[in-house]
Length: 279
Ligand code: AG3
Image (cartoon, rainbow, N blue to C red; front, side):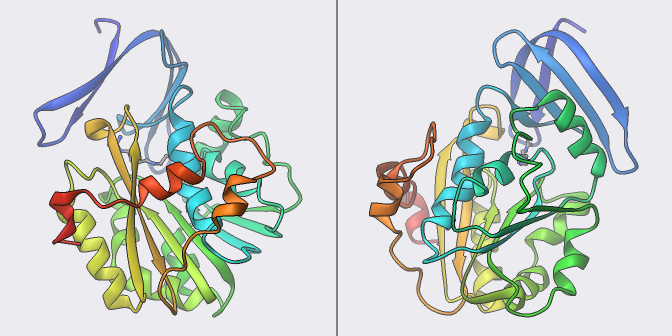
């Protein structure tokens, strides 16, 4: 232990290292190893099975981009379902929208949420909101038995597509999301790095289309502590082409954001040249 935390980026011959001040917590939950570190310059760090999930310093970019583009695209998002997202950062952003009447979160590992409540209280600041509902169970099974037309927006804030999260990138899962979505419904899922994982992004697009989503688009944004430092989310529309986002509402949003704004939203949808043909 040389005082640095390193996540080696599998198969990419590269890594992220953060200088550690001290380790605050480690436990083995029924699902994974959860660790919390105090870093020297990125605030607190949460890892799951050795993979970076959240740092204090840069998680706002990811959480804002997982939520606001979808919620400012749907015409009137009232019922939101979050799959994963145990650190509650996405939930906090979703609850900033006054139109949201209920936000249900389905996280497999309750310990992730309990540890986040203790070590990332800012991310969990809205957990007591009466609109928030927590389910600690498998999101794949939850969506499979959800009643049709239950949600306006489904957000998949998952770990990498390995182990229990692999099913969250499958056509079957997307088909169940499609059914659970109401008319005009939107699905958004984190979809890894545009630099390191273009094949996965392409596969996600294909699977969503095959599942029946009418239009699929990629959003991209920096996330310096995730593999390659550049990340994506994939947005899909249930029953019509993706509407243009509600740009005026985004520009006039009555709550603070640190990364998201209307121009950032438009820019995040621009398709990099090398992906233009494959997507
Ligand atoms: N999002 C985790 C994305 C995967 C990161 N991958 C990695 N470090 N290899 C979930 C946490 C944010 N709510």
